Image (cartoon, rainbow, N blue to C red; front, side, top):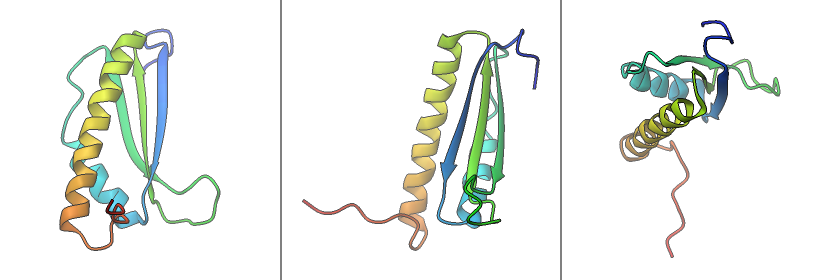
Length: 104
């Protein structure tokens, strides 16, 4: 990543998944969409949970750096939309990915 002087606005997101297989699927699905703006840098990886309960890389970690808060917000909003779509597909296509929402 670039220096903090070039990209002073930063955010790290840790998105936990039930297991490493699902975090890896999410990583591969989202990684194909490159960051379009040269004013934003993004790094994606899977890591083990911070609490050390497991060595399994079941957390999707996303690091953003941007030149302005506005560019950071736009990039993160776009990422969240993509993540939402990936989770919806996982819920529909995979077995036992997410708990079903209670029916009202």
